[in-house]
Image (cartoon, one colour):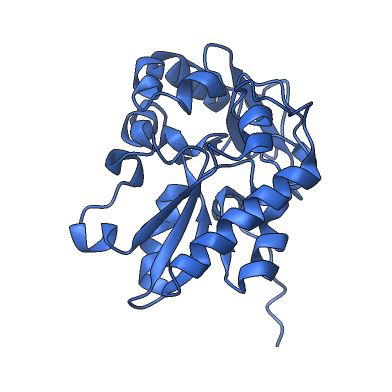
Length: 250
């Protein structure tokens, strides 16, 4: 600013967080990262049209193949004025380094970036990572440098849950008519309960899948465990780039 005047402007202001979104068609209910009402602040979305859940979530290295498209979209978001960037798919952790290097604003590709922090929070207990597809989630996705840390991670996949499989993964499944939020919640809760029962040493749950936040309360109630996800990472990111104001009084 010069003498109280802005010297250069843009067409749109006020969207601090930019989200790179996969090209999907399933409903984005309140709580989902791609539902703007999920957040108490404005976000800016950019659809990467070449990327679908049928590619990114079903093929471990597809995100790297599509990296140029994600880089282009991230750079567009930066030019449009966002102060930080995230994505709508936890499997994009494999391109965290490349995306972060492509722009000058902070980038968090996945809730899996929270994994080391959570492991440090819960002593020697384990973290249950709930993922859209456990068969595709690789060691590279987890981004854990130490083998001892990996031994404290238990995966819970949703790829065989009929309603989730058909609705979110987009895989045709016999007997599933369409998106049913109640049935998806039941499947997610049931899988988390099985995970908890099989691994009583688990001290926290981390949602890799960004579509799971609407079911966090039910999972928390059913397991008695803290539940983390991309929602928390974005909230933290937002307060880092738009620090709240305090009155300084006691």
